[in-house]
Length: 191
Ligand SMILES: C[S@@+](CC[C@H](N)C(=O)[O-])C[C@H]1O[C@@H](n2cnc3c(N)ncnc32)[C@H](O)[C@@H]1O
Image (cartoon, rainbow, N blue to C red; front, side, top):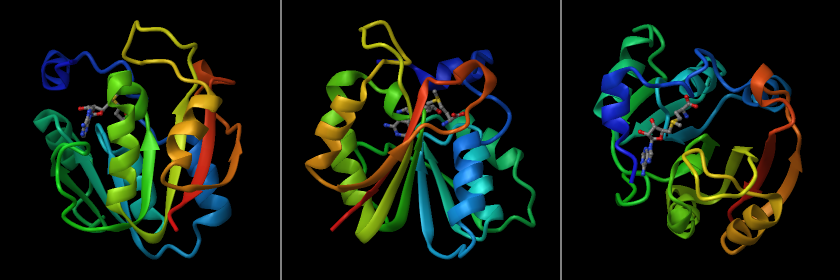
């Protein structure tokens, strides 16, 4: 099990790109204009994606089990951006404090041990309202046991999440320069 808090305390946050996922930015520009509803961002880190959702008008909650991630996210969020909030917690283990219109995934799934992936898929289902959507940017590294990040392929993603959700679409998004061609986005709906 990775000690995320220790990594934050040591400043070893090489996953942090200092900006939100390009795939999310593009999706919000094309589909997010309505800007209503509540969004949960599990494993939010320093909160770049949470602020992107909030700037698009959504009530966005970042959820992370590392206290330093939550503190760092709060520090980076201007007070005026009241729609972006952050809470400390375990997405996989906690009972949902609310059900959301969206759950947004970005480098949380690849960060957890592969044996917890079934729990992750169940958690997405539990945190979503009926009719809620799961928008995911998956990091599609080759599968091996040497993580995090842990690799995954499209087949496994479809198999795991189809147990709980209906796949509406998936596509290759624009990515950070060093992740070009290594990401795939999925949009799912809970019945
Ligand atoms: C690789 S980092 C990615 C952070 C952020 N999404 C980003 O792209 O900058 C993974 C994050 O997931 C958090 N995390 C891991 N397991 C979690 C869990 N069960 N519940 C909530 N957060 C978790 C870690 O603390 C860490 O902040």
